[in-house]
Length: 117
Length: 115
Image (cartoon, rainbow over all chains, first blue to last red; front, side, top):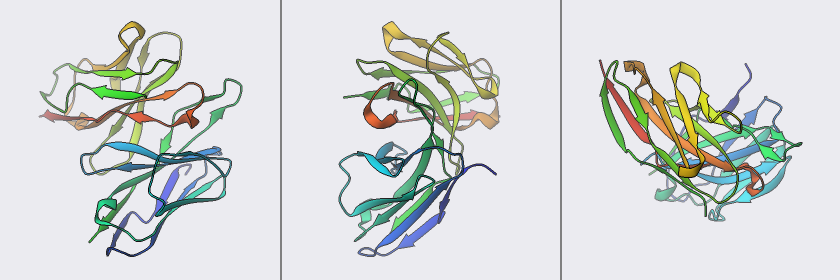
């Protein structure tokens, strides 16, 4: 199936630990994103990569480090986890219309629910 | 800075009632507009989108939205809701140029449809 996939779906961990979330898309898109959805369901952009290059970093603490080994993958590593990091993290991808320099709709993954105890 | 405002935090309707969810955005340039739906425990799915052309756009599952440029609005409508429409609805915009395509979301509207 063509899709955006994330692993793991659920992640429960202790404060201070380091964890990673993986994202893969097989839609052939060249732009990928990480969003954070808080307990009030508010969604906020964290990072965006285009062809493995970081293009958006929305004042996210440097404990969060995205890594894009290729344009189909965008992983999120989090160091020294804090209680406030508990949230659902969504990966997304989109094609870019190079002719109009415009970004199209984004396709979202199933989310990773991170709980920090 | 861009922002998106959704007028209603929680809407409760009976089946067959009509739905209108308000969305206003703040941005001086040209934008693309989206409505996403998040069913309980699921990921976001695109309902409909507006890039250009006819300001009345039709999406999946009988939803439609109208872009009114002068009002910076993109309200979502459905003439007759069903119990299965119970979900969280998000309005979002991204800048047509620059800004890396990031989506700016509204705070979401929870729709509860009573059978």
